[in-house]
Length: 484
Ligand code: 4AD
Ligand code: MG
Image (cartoon, rainbow, N blue to C red; front, side, top):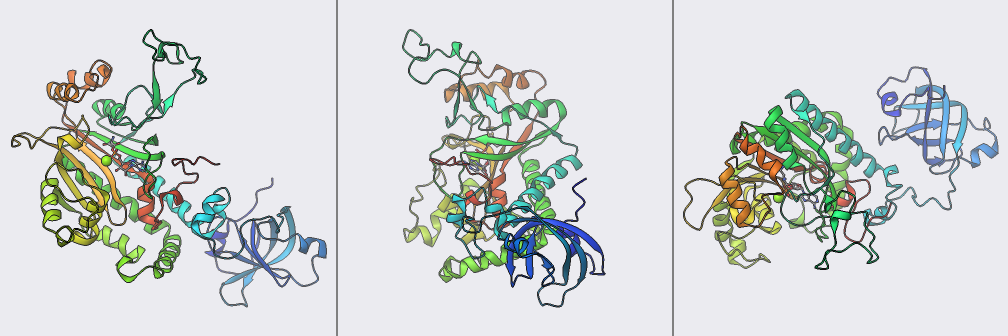
């Protein structure tokens, strides 16, 4: 058996009392031919390994280079040096894998995030990405725990679909037909997808919601947690072409129940990370503070990262209607001084991220839930509110906006009335026949129901304070970029 090691995180939590241990990991630094800072990915804290002078052959010492992998057995003793409570006095040392120091691109110095993105396959070995991805893991775990405790059924919805769940047409096509112009054609010259693998035109899913609704109207409460794909050509710090989404869907929920669940959910997973990743969050908090020092005073966050997370745990989100939000924006000095790039034209306009950020960061200074949006700017499945003034039809939609990020959750109560739903679909040209299976939920025992989607990477951004979404997913897929 090879793996008789203790992880460094676990080891550092013990008292140094002469215990014999084996550790394995990668060299971060090696100085004076005597002190190795060893990291095994369980924590950013390195273990100091001390080599007695003269004890190990010269050839072995030469091989202890940055990022070489080592197996070391020895005795844990209180450290004589400052900065760590224990040392490992090495008795045996084995180099498992050499690392050519001349070619290894990560030096023990500060690298820019842009540079690290170009070596995304190695960036996990830095403190920043170590912390980010351990936090990402914890959030994912907490998400499953939250829904499991509530009795939700975890549902795996398909990645390949024939429908456009959001009706936004931002899909990646999936096909096995040749792309060299020889694909079979219909009489009108269009491609004959009957000859394609699935016998129809298919694409990567933009959302698991429609299938989720089928689950909710049988199990009561379900959630999905999987990859989703959007071919929107947005090169921003908040958009990915491939991102992970959590989509709970609940029967017997109205819009308010939906908002309550979303708030409880977000608090729960933040709390979990605060309890299980304190060290990593403190590191990231420090990192963010450092980074913000380079910004002018008015661009810096008012709160530190941990402070911000604690604030979210202890304060309710602000809830207001879209209509009230438009009024606030219209009346704001920011608008009067024409400081918005997109002017606030009035009711019916779609909110740009600068508007969302104004509401969250400048006006309310806390997360905000906007609800009851104009039907015209939202998806077809959202429940039409009754009693709206003519020309002011709204739907029971809700978006959660977070400081520094903007929209983090999008959701709604669903239109459970078959007639209303079909009319809306026809109005905006969504083929009713193709979604026959979806409409069956409305035909056979329809119920009030609701759900939302949390963008996982945006949540990880919020909790880690990373400003670019490319730095919270292992291998980002963005327009023009699919390396690794
Ligand atoms: O608001 P969206 O488009 O809503 C839906 O897809 C619904 N079907 C959800 C539901 O009700 N079940 O997307 C939901 C969330 C957004 O609020 C955002 O956080 C994230 O998904 N998101 C993206 N994240 C990264 N990159 C992108 N291109 C994203 N598009 C949406
Ligand atoms: Mg949305």
